[in-house]
Image (cartoon, rainbow, N blue to C red):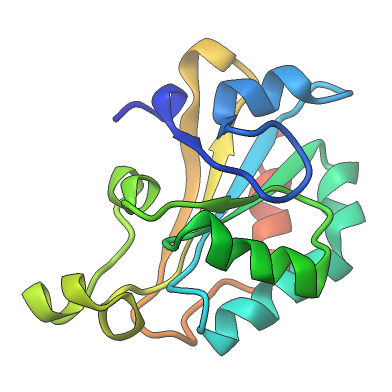
Length: 165
């Protein structure tokens, strides 16, 4: 799957369905980066804390001409409960088939067992895409977690965006 073909139901702000190209086209100002937060599942407490912490600092992403997209490998209905609880200011996508996780090499532990249970196997990932040239979207930074706690600090994500300039 190329990054341009990435298309998921979005229960937060922004285009629905959401693709990178639709997100870039809908932006009020040109975007330099898109930050993908690939979550484990809707029950993951660390995932829930991360999306809220990013929401608290969302203006810093926007100042750097970046958009954040959180992707949860669950149904639209389950993901919508996060939006109802947290009112995230950025797109929040459902990915029940884990297409985005597969496309961006989201780690899955425990082999076949981990693939059966996102709670056990799927680890968090954070990807910064350079979208300055919509025809050549590229991964500029990737953090693929080895545990549920293994996530980049927000400052690390902001630094990866700043490094594009």
